[in-house]
Length: 259
Figure 1 (tube, helix red, strand yellow):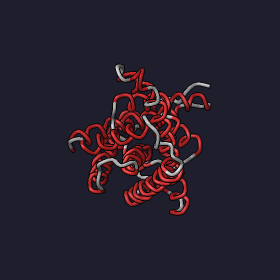
Figure 2 (spheres, one colour):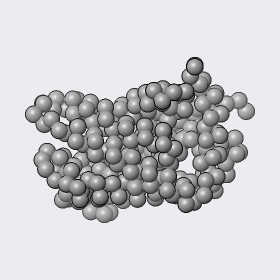
Figure 3 (cartoon, one colour):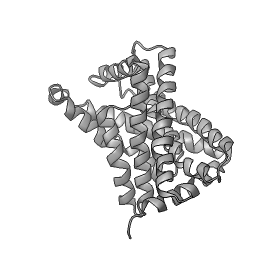
């Protein structure tokens, strides 16, 4: 079967967004915790694979980015195929419905807030239970790598965080758009994989991924305080909203949806 065209993707987004905004708070929370856990799973996998060959990647920084980027998208694939609620994806998915007046501003914001909090809970649960307490980041080179990642992310200038947040969710929401265009599981996997690989390899900032990377580094002893964590998450979240809601949701709807 042929892939959906851009106008059909907008129609799908309107239907999906309406369904998402109509979910009960308890169901939205549960599905958002699941999504945060999936993204954290992709995060630890990208750490283990991306930093697991230090002898090879030490002189080839692009290779480390390549390896991390190849495996991180498993998180979004799980989100899309399991119907979980991801804040960054919802930044774009709910916008066509809002512009078509099928979703109110209140319901849109309610969804974003609940899903953001739920994603944080899910990411922290995996970070603590399945990464730190299970000892995945205790041995080298993972111990030093996760500390460096956390310290690097939180030491970026605020403007850089914001712009990299725009880039990350532009890619992530394009991945969601491509997945909605697909008819088969392979279509959806390919749609998720390519743009997310691009954002990871380029070093952009994704707030839900950072809910894993920064706390994981802090647990291993990174010199990062709570204020620095929150500054990163808030600024990157703002950038993610611009990248997803404006550059994908709004732009696509304006270009491809009549009236």
